[in-house]
Length: 106
Image (cartoon, rainbow, N blue to C red; front, side, top):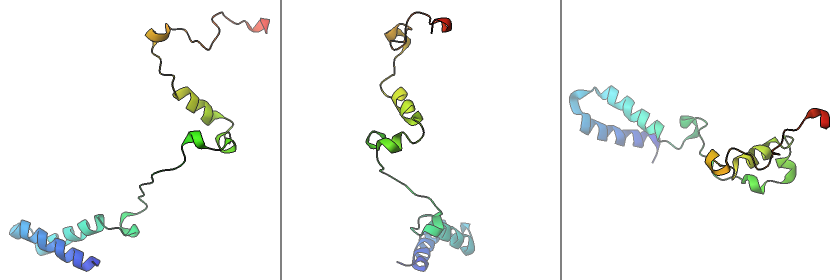
């Protein structure tokens, strides 16, 4: 169905519902706006794109994952499986030494 036929059909539906409450010109503008809003035409809806898919981070190649110096991997590892609350781990980090490290001793 071409655009003109769509606008005409929407106009007829709107005119039947609205009737004399609005002018025919206003109803035609609304019909045009509705057809444009729900159009598949890329010009009408701009650059909107629903992108789905993509390669999960776990499946990236090593060179792509380390391209930023490893920061993305660090961010990913810090966010995966480390949701401890203070009651579970007692306020101590199991990966860090418990004693104070002095710089002079290094």
